[in-house]
Image (cartoon, rainbow, N blue to C red; front, side, top):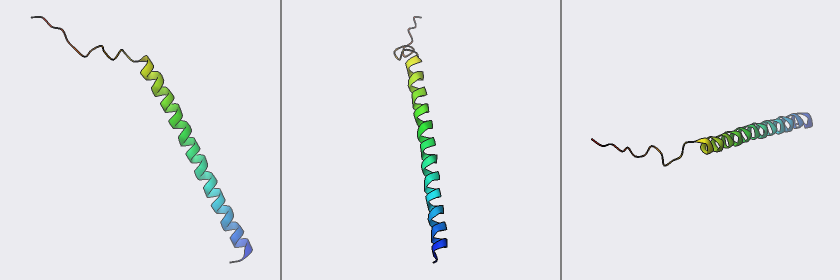
Length: 58
């Protein structure tokens, strides 16, 4: 294999690795955003002790 072909192959491998890292960073950021949103939603949710029992008199 000549030097030019080796250089091209190494450049392509480096590019593929960098693209993979960027995609993982995007996925990580989305997961962080979703988890923050979920924590906010849980904080705003109704009290967990309400609605578990039904008092009925006949």
